Image (tube, rainbow, N blue to C red):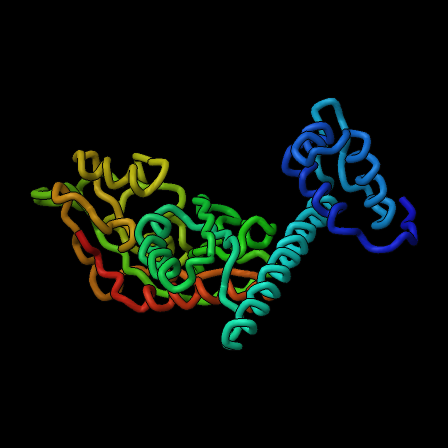
Length: 309
């Protein structure tokens, strides 16, 4: 497809690309945007002409982004978010200048992606501090499984502004993001209370428990059997262990608030650890809302990650 010379894509064209990708079709995107299907179709054809490539595969089942379309939609999400941030921070700067000249107050939506144990145990005190300091920020939290591209992929794809992620996983971080460590949590052996030889129990595991360093440590332990029970998440693992179905090796965040029906045993000085940090994009790292959250993450993350009941 030949590229036209009509100029860059306008914000409304970017919104249409994102809507088609998210809804899976032109008619559903039109309904979501309050437009006609022909207007959506015309806009997409115009965007394809400007870029010079086909962005969507059309079919009876709807419209699906091509590889080029996936890339375009990712950038569209990120550009649209930057336009939102531009407007919010400009208004904040104007309000602050009119009041006392101190500077812009962080305000507006903040999209956060987090894996389950971080969302349950790390985020609540962070968000409590954030609301107290910056009541104008509106956190929007999505729990994402930390497998494959995981939470970092949500940031790279423009669906989140910042993510809590494991930084030592077996999958490299996506391109186009920046990451910073917050804390390192230790793994421990968890088993039913009162069990004389917990290491003789079957292993209970879950797919997200897959940091490369952890797996390397596991491979060197001849007492750890192959997992015979696979659970959906760490909460299910803890429930199974509590019910006497096996033992597990779990990180500190997953063991916070563990019931008294389980015992937690230290794995010694060579125990594995998991590094947790935040991931954002270079362009959003300097935004007021992201900087405000990072400040509170660092304040809470510096506290001990010892297992708490």
